[in-house]
Amino acid sequence: MKAGVTMTAPQRRHRDVLVEKTVPTGKSALDIGCGDGGLVRVLAGEGALAVGLEVSEAQLRKARAAEAVPGAGYLAGQAEHLPFPDRHLDLVIFFNSLHHIARYKMDLAIEEAARVLKPEGLLYVAEPLAEGPNFEVMRHFDDETDVRAAAHRVVQRAAAERLWQELEEEVYLTSAAYADFAAFEEEMLRIDPTRRQAFVEHAAIVREEFETHGARDSKDRVRFEQPMRINLLRRS
Image (cartoon, rainbow, N blue to C red; front, side):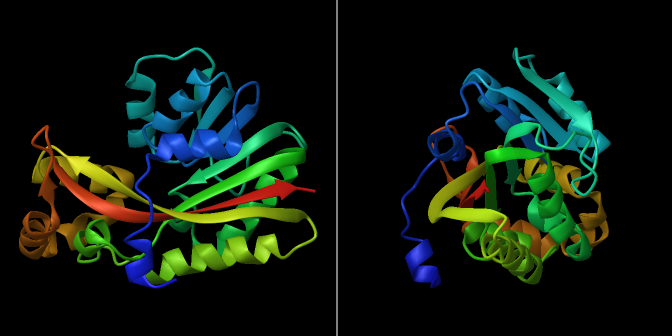
């Protein structure tokens, strides 16, 4: 899909797409790599029993410090070793997280999702494309072009297997907003602390690109557009 097409895709909010595609009410859901737990709280607010799994202690602290939502919980753990029995969940989500898993473990993570899903359960994978203003700023300290492509190939391989039924692939345009450059830096390094050295080494160009590609919104935040791809699969 060409960049010109994805950058004219419909503008949507992550939470709206997730709820529309998965209809989480009454479902047991797992968000793998849940970050600050935002989507876990969205799922719980929609009536799901939702758990967020996160390997980063910093992210877990942020998730647990947020206002509690009934039905939402958080666990430390890894995607390739899910702490759930077979056929236990209705919905498994990788939101902006599959490409953060080591490449040789990505297929294992999808296999684990298949293991813990009930028959007819849903796998929802949302990944950023390697293009757009948000990517242009990030690539100076963490160029994820190859790893994002690798994550998509993993999903495509899964979709071709008899274990899964591919329901949908869709691209939409969203945006990320930051109060200032310091807030951007804090989030980028909290998500992945291994970026720190490269961030420091390229801080000048990152700051320049931050100012060049960002647009101020009505709340005086710096906002960057980012195309996303979602893949929805059903467990056979």
